[in-house]
Image (tube, rainbow, N blue to C red):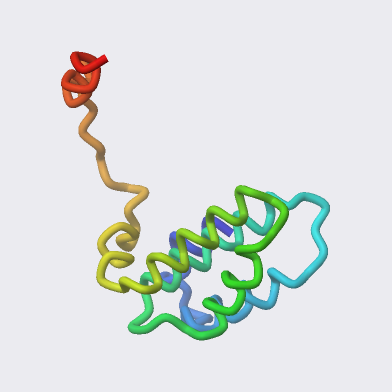
Length: 119
């Protein structure tokens, strides 16, 4: 699922909307592990960030599973629903192909110094 969310836009055979619909439908299947739904929800969120508008089917799926007994899935769904209300923010925090971006690491963690001083 992560691969579809991250690289689905590269598919020559499927449109993003088709991939999204398939993932939304897949959420309704029975799984041995609830983590599977988390991976699917993550992919749904990433794909929606690449679409011009938030599809109703994705909102329906997230709304349904936001009440899941599995807390991690609840979190993924609530995050999606919050971002869906702010599409520009969704695009900003979930850019296309971001897994290849280099991250700057501050090994000294200087940005935490004020917090440490306060403690």
